[in-house]
Length: 330
Image (cartoon, rainbow, N blue to C red):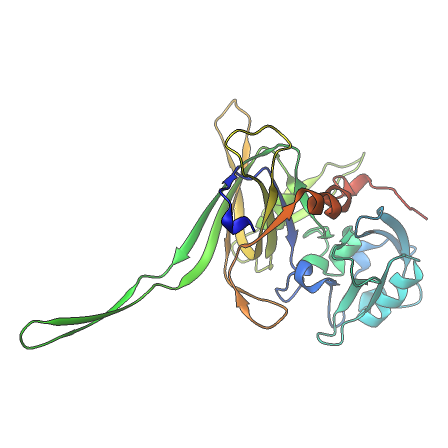
C-alpha cells in the first residue's frame, strides 16, 4: 500500500484539457459526448452540396474522417434525430449517434462500454454543439495535450472557509468554546506552458476561431464582455512519484493523475518583449456531482503503476494534429 511508504513526487510533467458536454457534465465521467437539443441551423458549416467532413476517434483507435451528407433532411431546421440519422449513415465504426433520452440532445457513444474515451473534431462538430461549441466557437469535444516537455509549472491553491468558533462566557469570565473547522471549497490552478496554442486559448477564453487556407489567413477574435458562451473544461495533470532517495529516469513507482472537473478561467501570455512567450492558464474549479449522485471536490488523485500506465496507452488516445488527421478516410 502506498500509504505505508515514504514517497517523493516530482512536479507535473504533462497535462490534458477537454471541454465539457453542454449542461456542464464531464465527458470523461459520463463516458459519452452530448451535442445540441431542439432545432438548429448548420448551413454555415456545410458546403453547397450539403456535405461536410467530421472526424471521430474511439478509444485509442485511428481517427476516422468521414463525409456527412444532409440531403435527407433540412440543415436549416435540423433536429437531433435527423442529425443522428445522417451521421450514422456516414459509416463510422465503433460508435453510434442517437438522441439522449434524459436530455433530448444529440449523443455520441462508443459501442463498447469499456471504452472510456471518445472524441469528435471539426467545424461540423462545433456546429452540432459538441463541447458546448458553435460554428467558429471551437472545433468540438476532444483532448488537447501538452505531453512533450513543454509544461513549465502547475500551481494549485485550495480554498478553505474560515473556522467557525462559538463561545459562551459565564458571568465570572469562564469561556466555553466550540470550533467547527472550515469547509473545503473550490480549487484554482495556474498552468504555465511553453506552447502558443490557439486551440487551448479558444477552449478557455472563448471567442471566434476561423480557420484559414491558402487564400485567407486564420483569424481569432477574442470574446467581448457580453459574450455568454459557456466554456467549462476538465483538466488532467500527471506527475511522477518515487520511493527512493536517489533516482534516474524510469525509477518512478507511480504516475499520479490529478483530475479537475468543470473549470472556468482565462488564458494570458506571460513573458517579456524580445523573449519567448509562455501561455498562462488560470482556471477555477468548484465542486461537481459524480455519477453516483454525490458531490465531490477537485482534484481526484489516481496513482497508476508503471504497468497500469502502459496499459492505458494514453499517447494512443491522444491525437496531436486533428486538423491534418486523415486516417480511415472514406
